[in-house]
Amino acid sequence: MRKGGSALGVLHSVASGPFGDGVKDMGWVGGLIGLKVHFGIMAVMVATFLFAYRRIAALRTNSPWIVGTLYGTILYGVMYCVVLAWRWPALFPQTDPTQIAIALFPHIALVGIPLALMARKSAA
Image (cartoon, rainbow, N blue to C red; front, side, top):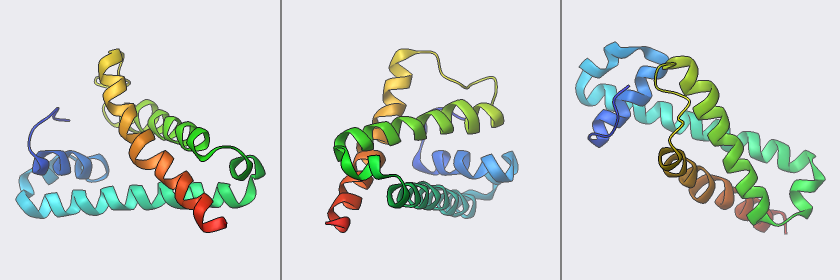
């Protein structure tokens, strides 16, 4: 897995998870595969949250800020301590607090909290 780099490099890294390192030699087609994989992962994250939100009353009765922060933290844990650690065991899980914060922030602020706020609004 390559750290940093261009958007295409990031998409190649995403695609290489399920499809192997050969996808990095596919140019923009490999990038499109990575984009599809990323949206597939996001769809699973959203579907999982909505499934749980409909069935667990505590998710509906607590603050969406707390629920979203908790869900984002769980997503980070699954992605970085299970999925990425399984695919790239030499690189993950991260132990540097700065790298953890950089990776944790978008899971909370861009996924968990918006999901919880939208679910709360749609249930009202």
